[in-house]
Amino acid sequence: MARILGIGIATIDIINHVSSYPAEDDEVRALSQQQVRGGNVTNTLVVLSQQGHDCDWCGVLIDEADTAIVEQDLQHYQINYQHCQWLDQGKMPTSYITLSEASGSRSIVHYRDCPELPFSHFKALDLSVYDWLHFEGRNIDELSRMLQWVKLNYPTLRCSLEVEKPRPGIEALFELTDVLMFSRPYAQSRGYQTAADFLNSLNHDGLMTCSWGEQGAWLKHQGIVLHSAAFPPEQVVDTLGAGDTFNAGLISALVNGLSAGLALEQACRLAGCKCGQTGFANLDKAL
Ligand code: ADP
Ligand code: FRU
Image (tube, rainbow, N blue to C red):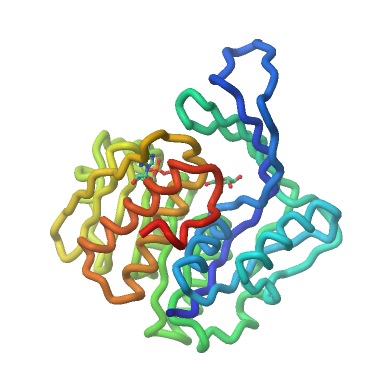
């Protein structure tokens, strides 16, 4: 069991379940609707907590009625959020999600009116109690200062960074981390058509992964590229947060001392289980 701090966002996810994805200018009726907590880093923490780790989240919370959805879920999964920054202006970031029953795919329209976590807030935390820090690749200027601060003051503390979207300056952060988790859209934005070609184009002292949906994921460590196939569930029900679950599986395996190859396989296995069900509950029994 490790003590893990995640830095990133929580969202309100309004999920409309539809039988198949609508065409543009269509009008369709949702089969059901859910309002749940989402957000990459908090999704990852919810899965890590179910893998037996002691998890804290640091991000921004807005003092408004909808925040109760986020708080209740974090409490349910025993995620400590006492280090969050509370603000009385703005709105919790909100995602309007269409989840297709035909394919299990999710399309997201995201709206935010919420300031990002500043370095000044992060700097006040006592990081000596943690075994691992996991960062969402956003808010690049402040994140750069956070990672440099960690390198300077906690040089042995392991840091992972999720690189999901191309953002100006994000590449400068790579050398400040031990583990990099890339997405297919990021690799494609750099001009690569395969995860292996993309990972081979990078030199990084630590470990890097690139997940590629139903094709599984690739990992590069000490110059060697490995692949794990996906673990398809009987039926793909919900792929929302598959990547966040993959990241949790990877961190959990690495912090528990598993080899790179086994960590990759465990991450794909956990993500596959998640795709076979709605949401993130009961993933403690998945492996
Ligand atoms: P994201 O959720 O960020 O778009 P991916 O689509 O790359 O991330 O998915 C992350 C991981 O989840 C993949 O590496 C794979 O192991 C698993 N996964 C995603 N989609 C499927 C699927 N349809 N069937 C089985 N596993 C899947
Ligand atoms: C899934 C997710 C959702 C959230 C969106 C934010 O990976 O974290 O829960 O609404 O992405 O970009």
